[in-house]
Amino acid sequence: MSKFENERNSTNAVKKINPWFSIWIEPKKTIRYIVNNDIKGFIIILAMLSGIMQSLNIVSSSNLSNIVNFNSTISVIIMFVACIYLGSIGGILSLYLFSGIIKWIGKSLGGQAEGDEIRAAIAYGSVPFIMTSALSIPALLVFSKYISTNYSWFILFAIIQFVGSIWTIVVGLNCLGEVQGFSVWKALINKVLAGLIILISILALTFIGLYGVLSYMI
Image (tube, rainbow, N blue to C red):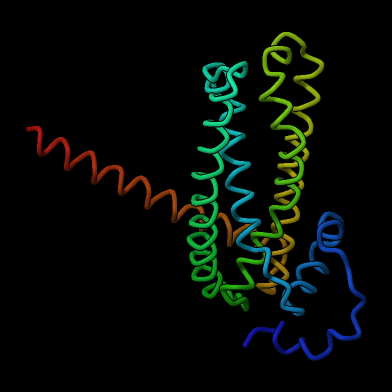
């Protein structure tokens, strides 16, 4: 049983808060409120939105934005549908995979959180990224031709995305640290180790796949 389950009976005295705003400035207090009051119904939706924004971010920051004809309604619709579909699936899979590895690594570090608490921390910790991306990515996609020739606009959108990324890291680490009973630095170690395991696994699978293909060809 986690510390949040032990505290749940005392949450009636806690003043209700709006997590969509308070997560920006009081991430620890917000994630504690979310977990203790069982208001975790938005976790999957947030995971999907995060995945969609990641997909749109890839499109807007790559050469794909130059390939897609934004004067063609069909091209734009196809691109957005693909980002929504693939991003949603990727976001959900990433949430469960990453949270599972974080829980596994965290246990060896003395972590206290259950899987649903870690998923809540990851999902709500992505709110700054989702909101800043929702503001900047559509503008980058629509006005990409103008931004490429106007450095003032490019710098503005770059600053928005940079601030959103940094604050997402700060909020995410505070949320994870709160549910795990870690400091921010220990939460960072937890996340970094989990990320390294995923990276090593991907590299190992890639190597095995390439080795299999080359062996078959030879």
